[in-house]
Length: 90
Length: 399
Image (cartoon, rainbow over all chains, first blue to last red):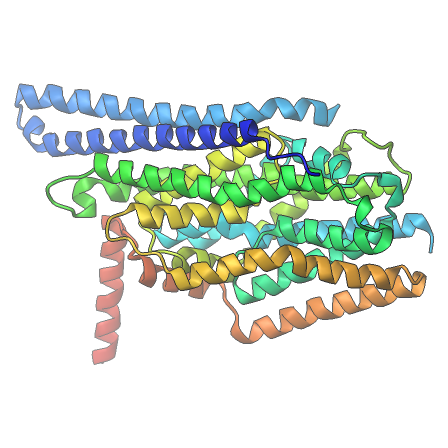
């Protein structure tokens, strides 16, 4: 009597939701991990230890890049629904 | 009664429903950042209201589905039936708000409308196939999907940031709070894209029924604007009772869990909104919080409260449908019935607000209770300020 569930649509939603969540959270968590690495290296780097200085800079740069990427993923998620605004305004 | 007057009444009632939807669902986005101290309560609801306002303009996919897909033949619907459906939705929404239950505003709306339509035009007028496909199945699966996503994300977040010492400041997990500001804003945005559309759908439905808009036409710009403003205002007024339940009732929330839960909620809602599913953001957010609670080792889920919330979900659609049906039977008697229905509805609304004032939950007391329950991670600056305040208090006590 009733149309059965549209499994394709359901799996699309589930896949997009799980993958999107994992992508953003993994990148942000890695960013925090690297940022804390940089913070731990900071005292040694301040004393002029070249190895620590380089490692601190690399960790910090990578962490900022990961924060930016996770922010970018969020923006992409928003952009996915923006095209719908055009028929609405018309 | 003049049909224009009834259409006007329904539009006002629909916007009031949108307002209640806003304050009922503020918790979906802002309960966890308030619980972890990422945002102060008033700041949180301000951000949520602005994001809801913006979100309402981003999509009308769900609005079109409600106005076109839920009812088999829109011409069988009269504005007074929509009026009756809305009273069912509003009264159930306010009852669950009073009880602090994060029930679905969407299901209250659909339930109210379904009950009213069945009394007016029989079971054949409702497109049960569309409801199953677009409402029932997503409602069944969405909290599970969001919970699974949040559970996995929490485990990953904790695994990545694990250190030999499990102190939150050493691991940097307290810094997830900064991410929470963005993730909770995203949830509020997603809520605006999803929930404001339901009011747009109802207003469009009544405009079609009143002969003021062609069947199948797009949602009008003034409808989008009015619905966006109503949900934003409702969100700003803050549903502190439900924030209390979601912030401390379901699980003890720490910043990493909060971020995982919010990202899972936003991702699920955005994915569903893209495909035109009328999803309950409340159910998704609750599923995410439970999932994140299970994901942290040592994390607790308060199953007693979770059970109450699920019971609320189960009863929402039939209870709202029952009120909608009674209201529909009343309005079908004629203009006098509509007036009586309106008076009774307003009376019940006032009574609920009056009773709620005896045990008021505001942004002042909700913050302290959540802090106690969720062990808020404080910054150095906040800790110093708290220590100073405690010392000052102690000095005053000695004097």
